[in-house]
Image 1 (cartoon, rainbow, N blue to C red):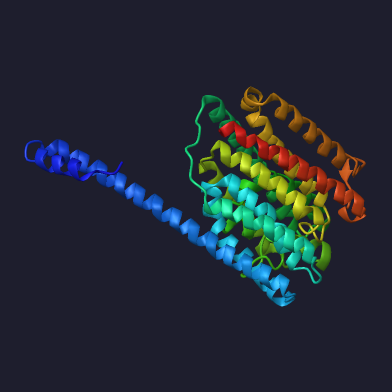
Image 2: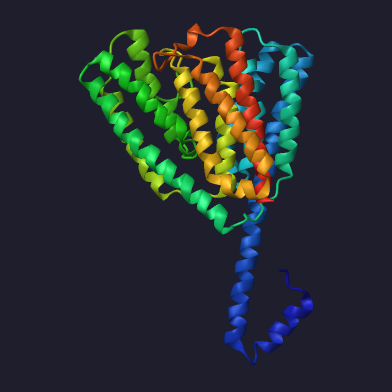
Length: 386
């Protein structure tokens, strides 16, 4: 609350009589002022970040009109780099808007980096992204609803994440032990198991700055040394030798253990977990469905199924409050989860998921469409926070 001149004058007068009381008020006012100043500073920082991205996006659109392919690619890369430098703070403060922005930025970046991109697709995605960035620029931090039911939902999901992380540590140890023992066959089998647990909790893992890239980056995703699951995946399936992978196995063990420590201390809120679920499904529908995630092992169906399971854990956590707010949406989500689960089951043989390369283009398209439908339905759960 701002102090008017009359209030300040009165306070100065009263200070001659009641110094201790006014001293407390002065501290409160100073604290309030500092809070507002910090809040205003963060808001201005967000606006500045968004405007930088909008400038790059508009330059990309101009280059697209001029049919300057090199500039389109350059501005696409710049957009992605800008987003990567801002996304953690935005994810924390505006999780739903963050997810909406990624929904268009990820496919835009993926498209412009192709040798022969589709101008029409880039144009449409750029328009959608521009709208999303405009909404982000106008964003206001809102006070979270903290009801007992929502608190219970968060606790339930946090327990799920803790459990999955514990299994990740164990399964990663089995994998890395096989790598260090130079047991290629056992390492390949253990790789898929460990990936399940990571993919289920990926939105939480991604919130820890540089830790996710160290664990899960694909080749050419990082500027420094490439480490993590996919570094060893390449050695297993493409290079045909894991003799020199011991240091990467040790590093992976260390990074996964660090992830567990961070997750144990993380504080979640309802909006954050729903946004994480949407993010998981968006990424699955847009990029992972292309087969880029597991480009050497081709166990992409394992990843997709794990993403769905991780998202479904969020759905189950918020189901009580969702039933209270919108039973029809709860039923729709149940139906959509059943559909994607059944669809994934069609691509199993003898209880194991098929090599992703065996799927036809229509089958991949069907998976993408169903994942997108599920993501859109999950987005509607935002109403439970209103």
